[in-house]
Image 1 (cartoon, chains in turn green, orange):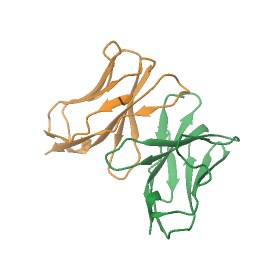
Image 2 (cartoon, helix red, strand yellow):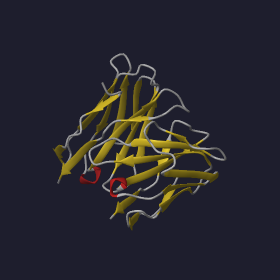
Image 3 (tube, chains in turn brown, orange):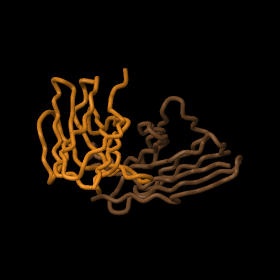
Image 4 (tube, helix red, strand yellow):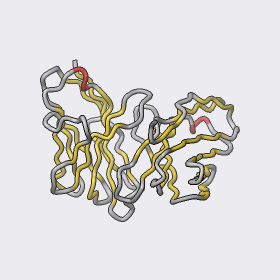
Length: 116
Length: 111
């Protein structure tokens, strides 16, 4: 099956700093990548959709200036949490979609962000 | 009303039992239905997908979709401790449409 990697798996940062999370599709070209937040006992919350070479589309209520998304190639998307605050602590998961099977999303292993 | 409803559980069953996991939905436009398995502190893994109504079987797993009732199910036969995870249903209206996820049902299979 398709493999998506995410790095780092866990990061702790101080309040006010920025953190970058990478998402890579390892064995397929991902025309579209998604970024989610997941809270305990809650469903995956879609933050934004990014298409290679174009600006990300953010969901309502998600601050695009705070969560910067770049999808510079067909295999890499990055999420940068700028000026992080403790309330940004969460599990961030990316997923990628293959153009051949667009209804299937392949998820990365997630990144646990803790802001102190 | 949420678009997708899923009982969060937890659901505890003895090893070897048949497990039934379910979701209901309200959006009649949904055509593709997926089940994901998520182990603790990991990303979801696609288990099965079904297009429109009907059944689909893959080993010990069977997915059922009843569009008339807006109800989908995942059955796990001969459940194993390794099946212990959270199972999320997901659905979308079309290949390039937004996917909506359920909250997930936590399953524990007791040896």
